[in-house]
Amino acid sequence: MLVDATLINLSVYLTLLLRFEGNIPVEYVQHFLSLIPLFTIVTIAFMFGLKLYDRIWQYASLGEMLAILRAVTYSMAVIVLVIYLFEIPGLPRSVYIIAWMMMNAFIGASRISWRLLRGALNGRDHAPKKNVLIVGAGDAGALLVREIQSNPQLHLNPVGIIDDDRSKRKLLLSDVPVRGDRNKIPALVKDLEVEEIIIAMPSASGQTIREILDIARTTGARIKILPGIYSGLKSSALAQLRDVNMEDLLRREPVATDLNEIASYITNRTIMVTGAGGSIGSELCRQICCIGATRLILIDNCENNLFDIEQELYQYPGCQVEILPVLLSVTNRARLERAFQKYNPQVVFHAAAHKHVPMMERHPIEAYYNNVIGTKNTAELCDAYGVQTFILVSTDKAVNPTSVMGATKRLAELTIKDINRSSKTRFAAVRFGNVLGSRGSVVPTFIKQIEKGGPVTVTHPDMQRYFMTIPEAVQLIIQAGAIAKGSEIFVLDMGEPVKISDLACDLIRLAGREPGQDIQIEYTGIRPGEKLYEELFTDREDMTATKHQRIFISQKDIDEKYINVGKTLQNFAKSGMHSKTEIIQLIATLLPEYQVPEGIELPQEKKSLEVV
Image (cartoon, rainbow, N blue to C red; front, top):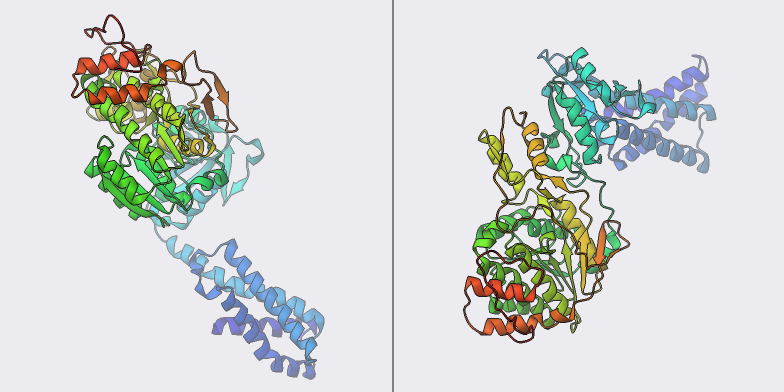
């Protein structure tokens, strides 16, 4: 502060010397001396007000310089106003203008000198630096360059930036040159002795990342990436750098959500998520916390999963939601009803389900009770307790099902459509394909096999699946809930299907190895219940676009033969315990499109769907 007071008054005195060419009249010397308290107090007061004394000047940048400019400008305006209003003997008008410029220069220089001194001291570190090439001259790339330059202890040296935008060629970004487009990467790595390539394009598509990765792999340099837009670019880009993974290769344009629409049914409400500890359920909880619900009821039958998501949400940044974990199974209707009575949820996301196809082929009874009866219990309680919106998380395997899992999810869809016919609750289902990174799914399985040295097992060379990242899928699920009116089956735009064999090859290459050479791929044959190709809707369903470009609606009304599915299930449950064969026979009776496994015989005459 003492330095600032000296610089403020030195600026005015030097201005007087310049104005009068070194020969200041005595009267102006007296005026200057009488104005010293005014110049000092007003200017320092504004510097306090704009928190210039609360900043770390070793990291001074444009923001700090603008704060100095504002403080000096406001203070000089007030000083001139006071002098003229109170008719205080003042100085020539030109002095105020020149003094304003000098104050900015002197105070700014005093601050920036801290940063220059820090840079000079850091420059004494003679440890060898790793040359890095940054791909992307946008906001993320600029942030990354500045962080690297501000952290010399990392021993990174940005030697160039790659960008396909021709208008940026040969320009400098924080003194780092933009050296060309992606095709220049191999030559630049060789010429500049680059050891690491960093892809700083968080909003780029998966196809773009794949193309850049294919080029970068040929160089032998290590490759890092900033996460995609769904992970959110935090203040520290360096902290988020990681190896490239499958999510990067499957990126799509960010989902444009209607925040007002979502807030209208989530904000300040009590939300229940079943299967809250699962892959989809836990992400639903994270995003709901960000939207601003009042209470979030976590339903799960696995204590470890429930504990993990509860602890994570307690530590979630800025989360003001009351977290209420409840350990129970949705198949236990009495316990579930007590949760409805106690917490009175207004919106329910039903993500609880058994999802593993081969496992459910061996355990159809569990699949039936969890996926069908669990859904029926939850939906009927939503109707009974006046829940506003119920969203069922479904799957593309429910379309023309060949597996028990797919068939039970289709029955779950039909169950909520049946209940919706006479309910004030808005019931809807959201159908989509595989998500990356879910527990027990193909990607984690492949990664474990690669870590062990292979082989990577694929069921069939032509096996294809739709894939989506978990955050994107959940974002669309929540958006679908906002536009649901009741009885819809929403189908998410999954993009193009991906060959599982191609997925395996990509993962092997991401691990720095070559498929067929370092890691072998073995084809094991299609397992029970699996299909070569999944479908998102049947030939009988009419798909209609919604106002959201990635959400479609199956417009086909519920068939007459399905109308009493709820009554059929109820009668079946009353008849006591059931065998595996009886469960599959029931599914086949309710779903003529279901392909019954070999060895299961259906009754010669199918019983009425209304009474079983």
